[in-house]
Length: 384
Image 1: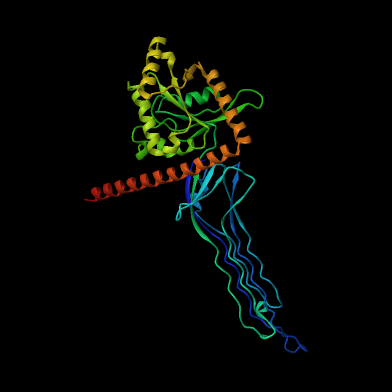
Image 2: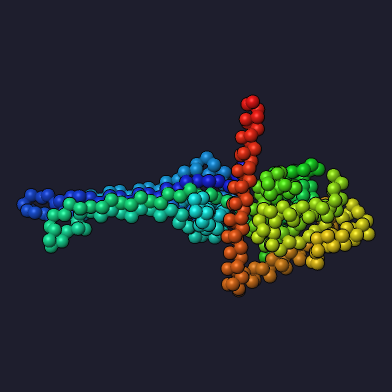
């Protein structure tokens, strides 16, 4: 199935049914009076996360959704039938944003609770509602109100504990293959990874976490270059980021300069995402002597002003991977405990999620605008 992580849809709630204008007409019953019933309420549109889904591809083919309208009222004080609500299922981790107001309606992380995204119209009133001691034969009714109509942008951001970050061929896919059962494609050319991959890292009974691998970043990614920019948003839900640095790049580039470029692209894409906890991991250390790795690490600390631990691994033969995974597990377990016990901590993270969602959307929209302008320019150029 094709992986699609963005879609724009239009949802329309049902219109409320109109009230009925009717009078009782039966033999031997003189002046029966008004008996027009109310209309039915329009159906609302709900969205709910579903564990069985992992892509938004279906919304590319069906971008419009309508709930049922309410039926009009009838005589004999019969109320019209209410329209059925419409339930739309999306993958876990989907953000729902109103395109017109830029309101973040919901982040669907809980698969048990549906969220209303468009409210159905209210029913109209029949003429029975307007009878009184001074108005025995009212001819007044009201129409049902229209349902809400919204244009929504759906953003799927994968739910993972650890996100892998780095240049193409830094060894991200090799690492996730080494520590989990995931088998992403591995090859010696850039952009081997075309879509995000998830792997479950298990360290024993009830001790596991999810690792996310996205396509590598390159310089200019925040302006739309390469593939990594498109999938950077999937790192926003992770607990922490693993920044993989290739100690001996195949293109003979400077590892420290490459690490600095990754940080700069991350800050351009989302300043809030750039503040997320990040660990540096030197990969492919088996290709260099220990002294050379020591020298590289010292330069990296000096150039990046890094005072936190730096891990050394060789993902191809799993060297250093066990220690790295155990430290990751301890950090994640501490985070989970704090999430369960500290309400302020949960609220602060929720606010960061909202901020990142808006930053990601603005960056995505601005890049699309620039890209469209460039496409138009080249089309005109070729026409000439």
